[in-house]
Length: 302
Image (cartoon, rainbow, N blue to C red; front, side):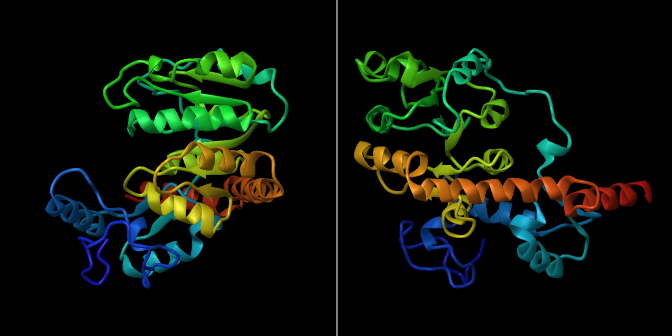
């Protein structure tokens, strides 16, 4: 993303607004930390160049990004089809590289409705041991039931769940917390016991969450995750954005705000409203359904 020649940024943590793209700040821009900046620019250039493409397909919905899709269509000479959420239109079999712990579903069955916060920082990002320590005690001190995914490799320098602090399991007990290496995420988010999702805010995870009416605590790591987190908290207002260093007191406060306070109830209601809109999009006559039909007709015309 070129923003009037200001990339690379002098201060990647700047709070200055990006006037061309409200409500983003400079710190929210999807700057890659992988490899030289010239590779990032090349990637962006390739994304903008549709070349001989006949169409562009996005896993999104008009109810989320209708105005942005319309603006993008004005810049592109090929049709754009928004056909999301794809996982609701064509449910796919699990392709996880890690074995899912399906036993956690029976643990969820024993929890009260909308009481559990599901915590999963994603399949790629890793964190420092200090961060996982703060997360652990923030979760424990919140007194809120949680299902926490700590996958192998999620902590720098460790491959095992034993990275959790000493005494943590004994303090939280089986009733308050369940720690797994991986979970069947779509099924977890659809469970009536889950009332919140601590997420890295990858786009697929975000869509899976709002498709079930589950609000979020956003802790993005890189790329578009920061943009999504900003929109979750400031535009769609279905979640909280945890920024800067993780600290157990702030984590505890965020969990309680989302799971136990009126503020969280309001976010949950807005998330449920988005769920209803998503369901309308994929029904016959809905925007995503119509776009999918048009895409099929385009393919058949070749």
